[in-house]
Image 1 (cartoon, rainbow, N blue to C red):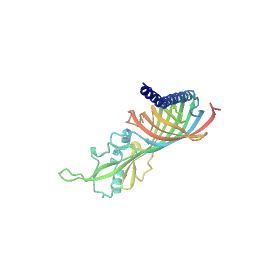
Image 2 (image 1 turned 30 degrees about the vertical axis):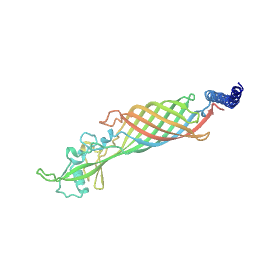
Image 3 (image 1 turned 135 degrees about the vertical axis):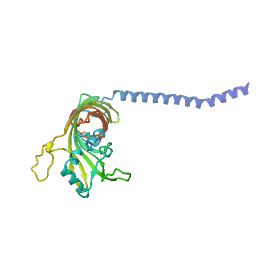
Length: 313
């Protein structure tokens, strides 16, 4: 009996630290849960995750990836309004082209049907413009922006020199065709924001786009000589030594479509911030012969300037 009493007493004493540890652990868990709940409550009750300005202005800088569809407007093919036929069918410009290519008067040149560039594309171009946003509240805004970009398209035309009808290798000379155009793109739309506690403001934008396209240059280059593919002489044609009347030919068009973009607003100071982003346009350039809607894309870095009062003031 005495032995049993000693054993129970020893077990009771050994169990005391374990019980104390369990009570301490439970107390720590309760304190941790309280802290988590308090943090969640603070997060839910935090009304100002980032400064809100009623009016914001910005400068856009970025890269524009124009759809290649309308780049074929500059390839000089017979289907286009600016075509090499104007030059090749004129006795004087035909002779000037041969001279520029280093050929003699007796040489013959022609462009086969498959000699035109049918898959031209635009180079990636720099774009820039102005931006304005009116914030209704922290999550809803309207924006207006206007951007300009200048695009260049280039490829080569295959020209046969002294073509023969018998089996032999053709003498093929490659000469470039080049197009240059400017585009003004105006976007008007709505922005939905998703502010984070880190003060970074994620957003998505959607709206309407108007694009004005102006043809700056459409040329064929033989040797180092440029020949204008725009028919500025009309039906009278070009004749050297005569008082040729040149007409002003404006090749421009308007296209209307849609805009969709995503980005992140990063405030740097109380007066400045930056917004990196990505966007897509969907509109037709409406250059003659190219009426289809096609998507184009862009990347930008916007420098924001904040004006007006904030909700925090």
